[in-house]
View 1 (cartoon, rainbow, N blue to C red):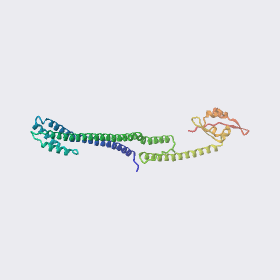
View 2 (cartoon, rainbow, N blue to C red):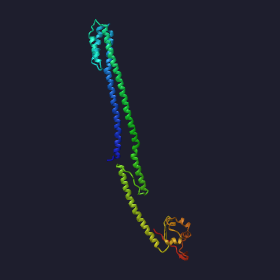
View 3 (cartoon, rainbow, N blue to C red):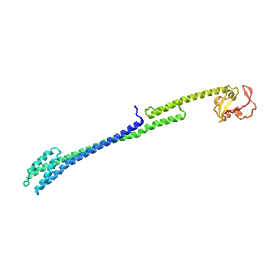
View 4 (tube, rainbow, N blue to C red):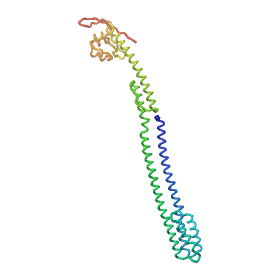
Amino acid sequence: MAATVKQKIRYGTLFLFAMLLIAAGIGLFHIFRLKKDSNLILQNNYESVQYVHVMLRALDSMGFDGKLHKANFNNSLQSQEKNITEKNEGALTADIRLKFDSLNDTLIPPATVLAIKNDLNAILALNMQAIALKNERASVTATKALTYISLIAGLVFVVGFSFVYNFPTIITDPINEIAEGIREITNKNYEHRIRYKRDDEFGEVATAFNAMADRLEVFENSNLNQIMFQKARAEAVVNSLKDASIGIDKDNIVLFANDQALKLLHLEAAQIVEKPVTEVEKGNDLFRFLLGESSNVPFKIVVDNRENYFVKEVNEIN
């Protein structure tokens, strides 16, 4: 079943709307993904980096107030133990716990402190590397999102431009054809038809127009045949008259001249019928004489080498 113009407009609008929704959906999806990655970096890695820095400062300060800084170290270590997210981070944290628990308030072996610092630096390196990787992944996600959105935006632009360029022709072309058909009918060209094969509203209009033109053509032909018949009948009646007869209308156009009149004027029918009297009288003295003669006095005309007398008679027909 062919789509109507209304359906085509609806489908085109829905398609553009769907493209915009897809573009917006992809954009929102990647934005939320970027937000999630950023939150994970903040929650998992930056917090671990902060805990490591606090523990490193506490180790450096234990020689001044071991008990206080051991408490700070232990608090940060407990938080770190709850925030293990990277591979090998758990083993390093457990090793730090083991070495830290071996310390007491009075005995802080430098070798143990150095070992703890090495583990802390390893955890710091793991998290910094994870931050770099997640930042790179976020950059890839952003680039991918930009690519997808650009492709969809380009598609929407191409489809939209095509829609704007081609859609008006769906409306204007059939309207122009119908308008041209109406002009032809107005000019009495009843043979004109709209060659428009579409199963939409304009197709129905074209079908109705062609049906109207068919009826007008039939009506015109029947009227023309009747007019031609009446004309032939009138010519037969005129030519059956024994007297020479010439018909002139109110606009001084010669309507008819029977055979007797043509013979007297030495003219053919095409030289006088439907011609202005001014044109005919220029080339025919007898015709000019008849137009100027107003009396009923007989006048002489030589026909077939014989003198014949005629009388002009004028009859007005309303």
